[in-house]
Amino acid sequence: MKCILTFILIILINIQLNAQDSNSQNAGDLSNLYTISNKTGTLLNKVFYPVGKVGNVEIKILVLTDIPSGIKEIGLNLVKRSQVASGRDQFGYIDRDEVVELINSFKIIDDAVSLGLPVQYTEFIHRTRSNFTFGSYVYSATKNPEWRYFLELNPNSEDASMLMSPTQYSLFSGYIIEAHQKIQEL
Image 1 (tube, rainbow, N blue to C red):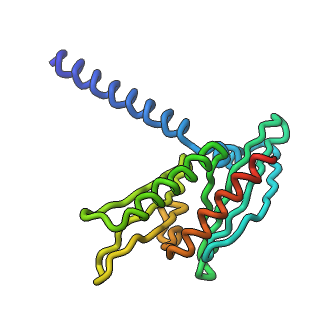
Image 2 (image 1 turned 135 degrees about the vertical axis):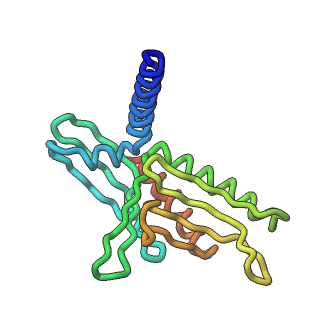
Image 3 (image 1 turned 90 degrees about the vertical axis):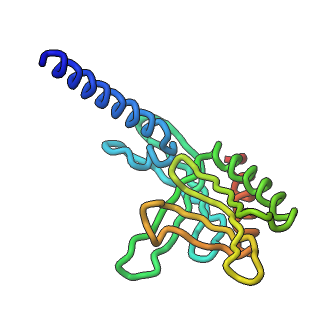
């Protein structure tokens, strides 16, 4: 009986330690912009520089400063306006270092698309620390399969995603590249 109780106690302690490791890892994976913008008990200064709009998604450069500590973060703020009066706008953040990674993803996708349609179903997905997701996939439900593009600002909301045409994708990637150049100047 003593062995069984000891065994159960060891399992419970192990489960608790794993849960703590998981939570601390998730906290470290959050976007810097997201972390500071949700900080309480401090004064934040947010300065937005408009970059462009694709569909109902606005792209802005965000300079976020925690006034008391002087910590400053720069990146992108994407806002998808709700299509219903009672809905909530959806937000996505892309930290400065993640913008470069996103641009590299554009190049890889562009190379894949230039090769034509693959034989097997193929998709590319780029996810940032704040769960902003961009991707491309081969849509083959019609007679003429084609590459399609999408973005998702919040994986927990149905109203937070947008399908993009090739023209919208080109506009979106151009805005991100333009924003990256402006961020370098700030």
